[in-house]
Image (cartoon, rainbow, N blue to C red; front, side):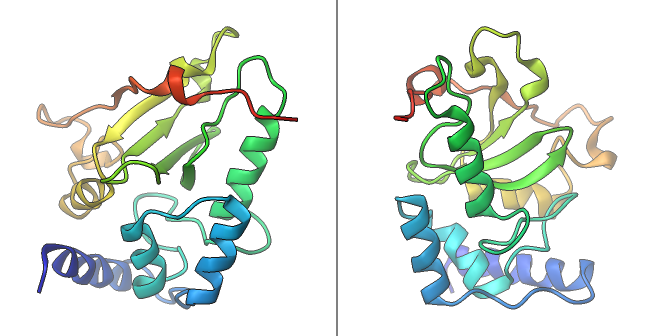
Length: 186
């Protein structure tokens, strides 16, 4: 068993214990449909979460969004965020980053599908000063696997019980924000 296999096993156990009725996993066809709509390939670990655990409905706080479908979804939120950036002087959402859950107050966790480890980013638009959206992007975790581990361990900044601990790593400004927030063609 690989480390990722063990991680997915532990995520599945936690997801099943947190939710009474998890959504059905997505199919290969649904992943292909999502990738076609996005215009890029999803991060492999993210695909495994949706194919092997459930179509969202598990994870920290508000839980992972469904991949496709009516209402809020990974694909729908990405397309909406990118549309909002279309023709904007200062685009708000980078290509290749899919929103996987909302933290509320217009904040999102996103996975950078173009990074090898699937960096997890925090979009916090409440910090927007009207100049550039880059100040609203933070690196939450260097990889999706590490982010899932913090959720399982209860050590993420988002975990209420971890808030008073000294060893909790807070998100830091994303150093790629300026270069990745390129204008979107109209």
